[in-house]
Image 1 (spheres, rainbow, N blue to C red):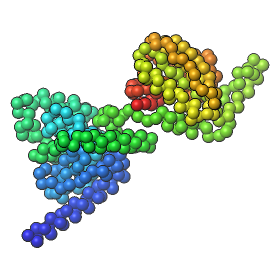
Image 2: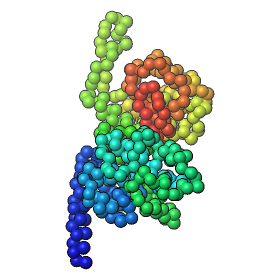
Image 3: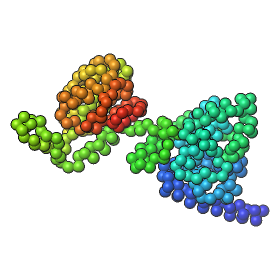
Image 4: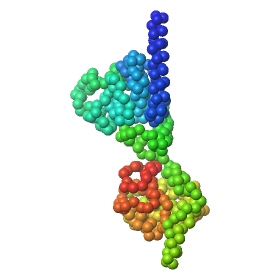
Length: 383
């Protein structure tokens, strides 16, 4: 028995060394995957043929990892990281557990391959599923299997990652699990934002986890970043001062570090009262946090309803009226006619309306409750 114990320990030491190297390499080559994978609980299991993750634990077969190269283990760690991100156990609903696991593996492994990781032996991958959501793949696989035999061995003929181990879902600890999920979501959103700013987000991530493609950040962070980029000096030259043009004198206006911010509020019928209240609250926070900025506030639906200029120290006081349809063009036309050299437009809206044909000469940030494709500008989602 002593000899057997020594062999087992020797194998485990070699496997642990591989895992450590794979973790370091994954963190270096793919920091997004590496960061998430670092939280995985890694365990040995003789009940599986290669490796398997339920989103919190990565289980591996010792013989498989002993034979695997570091690249293979790096892939397994990334796979586990993506199962954490997908929260597939919570998303499975009433679906068949085995078939859902297979569907998520097809989605995950396709994306990992697209990001430059090498497919290990006996890993679930089919090219026909590239770029597809797990839900789509599940329906395809389900349609290809006789419903009466959905739990038969046939459904796993093409897969050897998990073997015979069944997913273990503790329904009794659902409340504790939900608290953990909430913490995970906050961590993942912060990680997503950080990697997005650094330009290191994985390729095709939004197709695998569409909810994370929504950049749920406080729009003030975007405004801070904008100001930091454009207020590098105390003075800057702006386009010619309009007051002197009639005399034939083309003097550039000297602008201080004050920026003129235009806030447009969509008061159309498609925006509910609660959302309008949120808009007003956010506008008020602008004046409180940026007292040195002039703020033009425009309310509009299909036409301009009101326009007021607020200076530092003034209390925001205006009436939201209209509630008709939405035509963004009237706001941009109005700004061109009435407001000299705006630096930034913050447009609070649900994004449903008619857009101008060309992009304005100033930066536009659309602030909305859900992300949709817009013809220009940046989108910040508030929740």
